[in-house]
Length: 383
Image 1 (cartoon, rainbow, N blue to C red):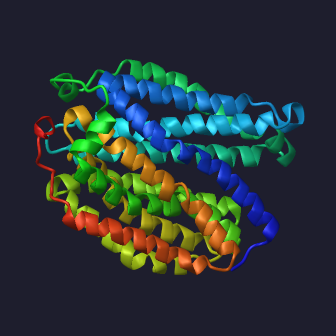
Image 2 (cartoon, one colour):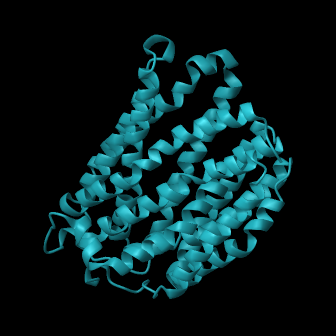
Image 3 (spheres, one colour):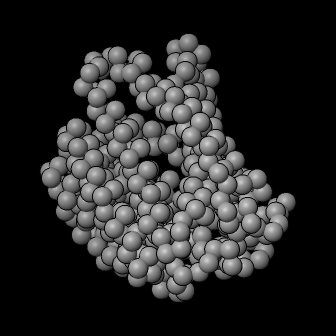
């Protein structure tokens, strides 16, 4: 199905600005990951939050184009760049910290909290968007209402800074014997195999997440004309199911290992992605069904992959080990996924996109198959 050139151009422009943040994720993953391995997980958590809150505040207070001209989009791009730096380091450091405080045999369960918190944040943002669309006239929403979520996010950042300031350093990091001046280089030199496995783990995972968890509601609206509010409610319902299922999947990864769940994710999306897309119609109910099924299958990876990747690196390199390769892969394949599906749909080739997802998931599936189980390793003993 093709869309109108005007609406497609507007969406592509918005997605291009959205993608700017992803361009800076690899730099954030490398810099904040290295900072975490030198200064500690607690300090890095505060740094990443400060950058995200600062970017949100800049978006909230940026003057309009009518007042400052080209400076307005420059400020928005700058804000997205700062947020990209933060996001590139946040998932890395958060995963490292959560795994560092997890009791033995519970790292999968504790790691499920990472995507739970991320999804709860998405749900809160979606709910706020629905409230604003309902409460404000279109003119007010366009002139100032869109700034409210960013201002609210900046305020929450202040509270988050306070909470993270009370976080104690992990025992496994405190007990590490040495700190490295350039941990990112050490990772590439001494652990090329593990670094390649992080890329293999992430390439399918990130395109699935940004397709089915992030972009699918907008895709259903733009291509299949699902009403905006109905698409948002379908998305919220699917994400609630996802949040409820994640701890159970985390416990399964602790009981049976990371590898079975990772293979279930990889093989599932390799086989089922074209079917998922074929079921999307103008019905919000079918959107909910597809998103729920896809997110439950993605949950197998979300509950197992963070621990599995971190369990491959020693403590002094753990954040750097996944920081750069993970963030670079997300930027190249996750950040570009919405733009690619929109572009292909606009040019009558939307049916190609599911096979692109299949190809990337097949790469991840091979990586999962070659991965050696690590659920029982002691983090302090990984060398």
